[in-house]
Image 1: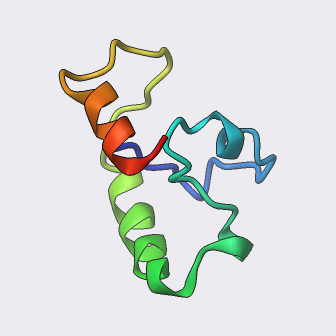
Image 2: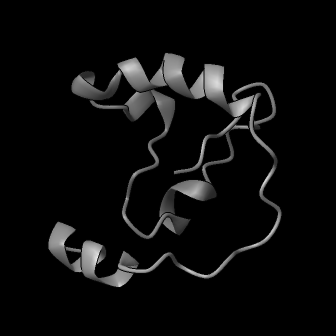
Length: 70
């Protein structure tokens, strides 16, 4: 799971289509049942290291994507 620092985000939206499991939403389009994640994201993003390069998928990632329909 990745968190996006809302203070660093420039709201360009480039990350939205890049997410392979469609888990990133523009804040204005965040579904009502996901609103709690705004606070969680803001709290956790500042405590974690910045990811500057793509890593290898974790074991089972492809199977999980299939299960989720992606």
